[in-house]
Image 1 (cartoon, rainbow, N blue to C red):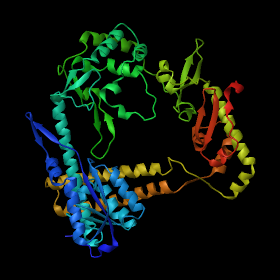
Image 2 (image 1 turned 45 degrees about the horizontal axis):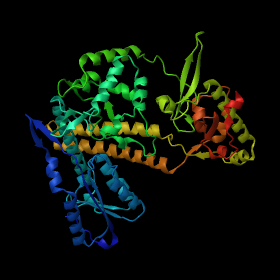
Image 3 (image 1 turned 135 degrees about the vertical axis):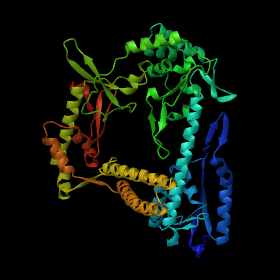
Image 4 (image 1 turned 90 degrees about the horizontal axis):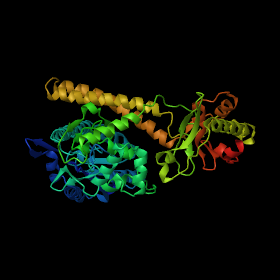
Length: 549
């Protein structure tokens, strides 16, 4: 049992968490709930709060605040109340964190041990997991016990993840609809959320789209008609409008939305599952699954489109689709931005009969749907624009070299400059890959122990060695990230500026070192924003392309 001998010293944060995950396994049509249901019953937010309050009352500990994350997985540390607690720790409002048990704090061993072994000690915060008798204020309970408990909690999470996957695969193979939002033209059956029924108001729109495509109309032309008739777009109907930015201009139909509908086999009565998958239970990243591995079942709901119409439409799409032979590489790619809508500018080739190709800039907002007139083309000759921009930057660099400011800065050998994608990023990526390998090794060790391949003694010895390496790697990663956030990257501005002036041919590396972004307005006026304040402080007039041409 954990005891606090000097409670008056502490201002406690009580942290409670509960996942909203429900893991079901289907066997012969019968739903069997997993252990998580029992966990929710015994470890509810209310019960955790009551348990921790009683503990604090018994020990005489002053409670600063209770932080509750209800409905958040232990694999994810990006939780609102958890982040609020960390901010209060940084502000020195809290110096004791209490949880019911270690699993409530988190289930990823590397993250848990980082906080218990590094973060909390560095911030002079005592950590207590009452039910697990873990107390970092007592050295003998704070190291091995925490690491082993964290490891087994992560194993539980991994085991639950497997159950979730198996349950989803069973549903997918049974032809159950697995999507959060229904396909445009369908609704979820009130009697069975895993089954589609036709939406009588929207299905005619889908039929009209297919009919026009069957007659040979292009997706762009169909989108224009749908927008003119003010037909509701898919996001307005299926309920995922929350993905829009609050300040985003409401867009109408575009060719991509039409094409997605025309290529969707759901309208034939098919249920298609397994198109996407998560990397693993630790990562949020979603991967696309090759089409040959999809689970496709026919006749699972009433079709809106017949097979013949769908086949003809696919032939029309295929006849117009041409594979892009090459991706155009250009010096200013990613740096040019539309001043009006803040979208990136891309290049559009114009091929002449003589065989010559000229590239022009084009606003991506305009390109997405010209009919809505949300922006203008911003068309400019790429070669001329590039030459003007490079000449302007060279001129600015010469002004810097010749100015008095250069003399002042030259006495200081380096000029500090904060780069969001700092030079430590590569090292962090390498270390994180090594950390991932060690985590897989530890997982494998545990499985060998469970299967009797590895003795408990050997497991403990190898695990401690692997975990030591893991802690060293994690410490280095955290150190690099911390330095990247709090310290400026030191760059020799004088050297960069001189090279830019002297170089006959400018490469992209040199350009990115100096320039943050370049905007081009509808009036073809160019503004260059430098990464170094000393360059931005100089007279920053807009360059008119109309005068240049």
